[in-house]
Image 1 (tube, rainbow, N blue to C red):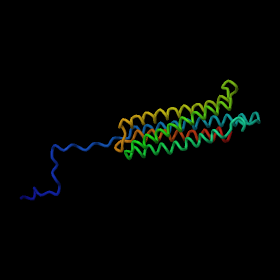
Image 2 (tube, rainbow, N blue to C red):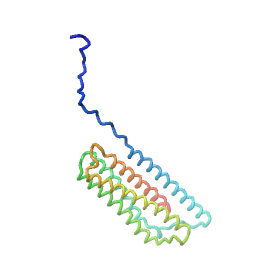
Image 3 (cartoon, rainbow, N blue to C red):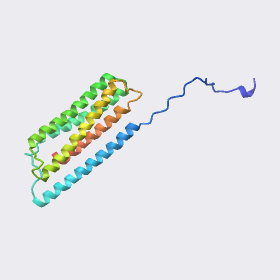
Image 4 (cartoon, helix red, strand yellow):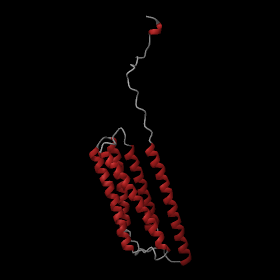
Length: 205
């Protein structure tokens, strides 16, 4: 045997399949970019709202909102709801990553329930506040910010619901849980947006 035939490597048969290439996390990156844009947009909207409120106080010397107009019970319960929803969203990702479909569906359902409850509590709060968009400029700004937050939460609910349905169909598992991670990321950003709205509108008034 010649030295040319000596090798420390095993010969690979010609019929061996090539390894599957790693799939780029396009959906997760796109969701991250959209989430950053959404949060920056809401930060700008809240900034305009705070500027308008400061100008109103400077000109009139009157409070923008009062405790009688905005009770804190509903806003605080909504904060609790979105906080718990962020935890259950992460639970859903963890379950899918571990091929635990039952817990993934349970966590997704609880997250959606928390989101719907936040929207329902918001409408109940608006009925207590009795704000009319045509009443004055203050009502327009308040309803615009709150309405935008509700719209964002609805989008997050749709995104997570569709992802949950795909999980039921076996589309996501431990090998590919990017969709659930993306939906959870968007959901958590939506929860942070509510925290921003909660502090700017309901707490500082």
